[in-house]
Image 1: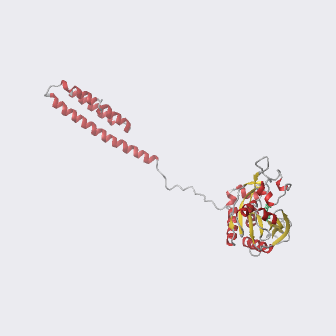
Image 2: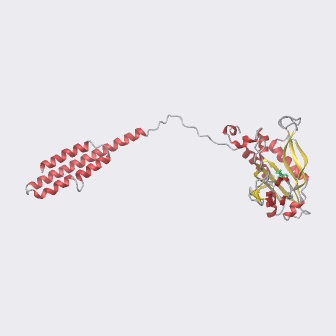
Image 3: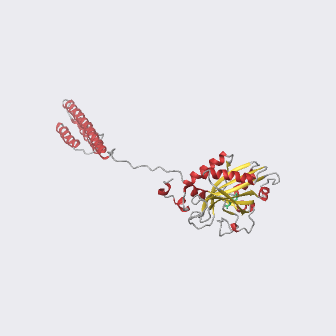
Length: 341
Ligand code: DAH
């Protein structure tokens, strides 16, 4: 038995010495020292020994066990240290390599102009209202005094959702006027910015989706003078004190009288050039005194109250503000373009 123990010690020590991984080492521990291991197997035969031999062999067996345990512990530590070292090498970070610069975005020019406009209107006592982009034809047209045969209602011009032409993508922010007047008593002073949709082909000045800012003021004694004063103030704040405006008669179904407001061309100062297409002025917005029919539809007494309304194109304002010559640039979102602002 002495010989068996000695052999076990020699062979196990050499196996432990050449174990390549902590896992391999663990299976060696089970193989030699486990409950069903080789050392236990030898000890089970102790019963065959004489009473003189037994303590001697017992002590020897203990020594072998201690020896093996120690060898296993040492080897385990070695293997872990090696593993750690190779991980440290493979996961090494070179802190001297230049980093990848993080590109920080900027406010879109449309948002810049919208925020400026909002700030000016709010400083003049306006609050901000909103309405749905998917709208009833009733609000987009009927209640705004667009008669049944009005060309703007044509399927060629407008995106309808239903066959009965009852629901559509709003073509203007003007339906928000109706929603506000149906729900609030005068005095009313709101603007309502938002997206609108028309079946327009994309070109340098058209897009099937664009933005408007609607405005509405209703109170006792509101006149065309209030309309002119308010719009001149906002236009000068947006484009500079020396901006020259022109109010031109026009027709909108929901205002009477109606007008369009132009600003003198910044490029040629009114002489006529490529930018203003020879006109000397550039159209900026539509406006007018709210039609009495529209007030009445919303339950507002047109003998007591009057109001003015306006609608301006945000893209057009942005193009003027930043001298952008093509509307498409605004929506393409090419960062090389957007970086300029
Ligand atoms: N909704 C008109 C359009 O899209 C613009 C407009 C004109 C709005 C006159 C108004 C207004 O509120 O009074 O062409």
